[in-house]
Image 1: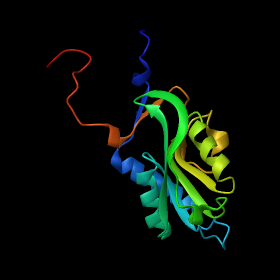
Image 2: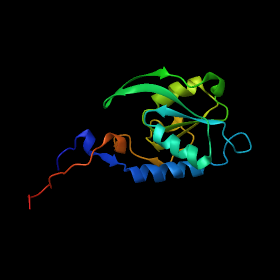
Image 3: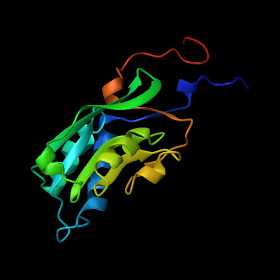
Length: 167
């Protein structure tokens, strides 16, 4: 058996799947906010958290949605996390009543940075890897640390040659 390249141990997520998993995350978060179960707002970690945050905001009827832009990857290479754009300071405070949403927690470095800024926020991701799990309170699916998740916004459909033969 040959060794697989890192991208070959992949978990491919379709638009339908991210929608279903984001709705499942909304159901887990419903009624869990500090204000009689309600949340004051949602902050999506861009860019991956934007689609799940939009779905969760719709499902939970949360109208206040903002973003925090954190850069921690350059293509598939992880680097030092840095905030490029912060959410509205009046909304955030220390994070109490705010859902911070991302698509994935990998190493946990991005969420660690955001958690230091908003320690009372509730951190939720659709997918989680073991190293990052301590940084997130709520998630839907765990994958192994060495799995690369292919999100639908990163993919294009194309023909792939079969492993054996061409007929």
